[in-house]
Length: 293
Ligand code: R5P
Image (cartoon, rainbow, N blue to C red; front, side, top):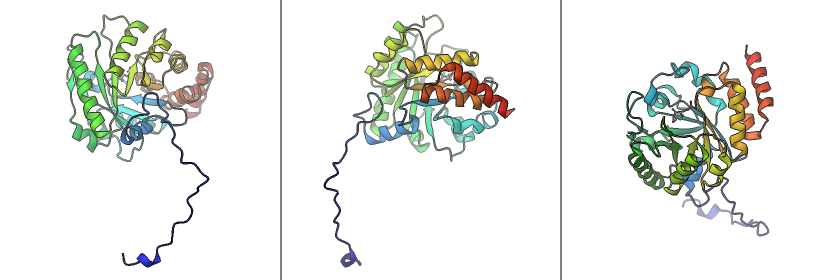
């Protein structure tokens, strides 16, 4: 090197400061590689260990549902209030500004519409495209007990192998068929199967007995929203889920179909990250809604 003789001799090695080795903050993620952990950190807040994800991927099987007719008008202005966004590559590429710096959870399974058998999904995105889009995780629907149960499990395990290879976590989304009973016994089975087969985190519904679903899952569980509820009920559901061991929420219609989506997101954030009581969170929602006019 031209200036080799100007290099200062290293001298401060802080010999009295031990090198720290901190465990990673998420359940079951301690032995994951740096890339997987770093991507997880774009989705989950390291301080609370939780996330508020906004799900807007509904169009991939149900078309432009209420509240998502115009993602540019309805969703882009509220992006800064969530920790991560769950969506399809079509909406990500066309409508979400590339300056968006938070977590992107990409829907990577698909196929059937609401007019057909929903469990007949296949992997719908190539890993190269997921990498090109710099996603933080890949979401795949898993239909335990559904007609195409094994096919959906194979979609998931294939994606987990690919995700582990490239450092991208896989988010298993437990889908419940119309005729199936939504109870803790079912979700214990579904969530545990996803985790045992390698999913890095799992999306599941809140049901009474959720604490047993969470306790028996070795990976983080994120609560699904479901159809639109009155705001207080949605806040109660989120509070119960967090109290019972969920690592966050991934809600769609209860946010973008609310009269005041930004106020609702802010109220949900308080519940998820600070365990604010639902009644107080509702007061916050009403205040913010009124302030916004
Ligand atoms: C769930 O299976 C799909 O990913 C949905 O499109 C979405 O996540 C559902 O969100 P929500 O039920 O909270 O509207």
